[in-house]
Every structure is written in structure tokens, then in C-alpha cells.
Length: 170
Image (tube, rainbow, N blue to C red; front, side, top):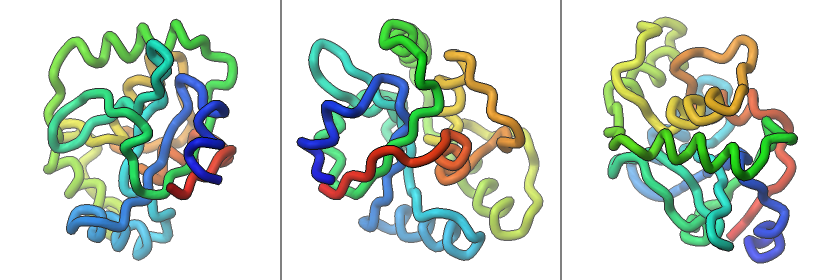
């Protein structure tokens, strides 16, 4: 479905899995996911409605921040891990996570790739990546999926979040 159709169906707290095809990091991430039997998610974030605008709460190379979801030009899918969470509770969790700048943990991204390809890597993250940031937000809302690695990849977050309820092709 297109973005204009999907937009009113998206709720605060939904998990958004992006499948970018642009740039070397997206290419490497997609390759690692494919080689390790995963889905082609290259990035994840959390949906947040604020003052009538729909945002993606994310962590990327620029740190943790909000970006209008309409600016995401890659295909994305949406799952709803917490169907009963209130928009107010999501706002509180996001506000808490945004109080302090969080830098991107490139070393953790490498460790996630090693774990996915070879099955072993240290469990302690060396900084957060997008999927760990999403996990942190959702844990503040009471989400505790069984069996999720403490340093998850984007596709692991999407799988744990439940079935895809919306697919968007911009």
C-alpha cells in the first residue's frame, strides 16, 4: 500500500522495519541478513504521533532522534507488538530515551553481523544500534519477548514484534 493510505492506520508504538536498498551499509546489512537466513530489514524504529505528525523514532549514525515517517523513501513494514499501549505511554518512553544523546555503536553492528554469520559473538553490546534502541523503548513499555538476543538485529526485532500488519511501498 502507499504511504498516504497506510499513514492513518499506524499507531504510536508500532515497530517499523525499513528495507533500504541504497548505500553501502544497507547493502552489507541486506547481504548479512540474506546469508544468515533473515529478512532484508536494514533499519528499525518506533512510530510516534506527535502534534498531528507521524514520526519514526530512530537511532542512526547521527544519533537518536525523530524523523518524519514521510521522509522514509525505502519500503517498510509495520508490526504492532503492544496493541494496547496508549499513545501517552509511548510519548513518555520516547521522551525518556531522547533526554540523552545516544551515539551509534558501530562495533555492536559488526558483532551482530558476526553473531548472525558465525553464531558466536560477545553478548554485551558495545553501544546501541537501531534495533537495540527500539528494544530499549519497547522494554520501557513492558515488552519482554522470549528468546530475543540482547543485541538483536533489525529482522529479529521485527520477528519478535509479531506479524506484519502493514506493508508500505513508497
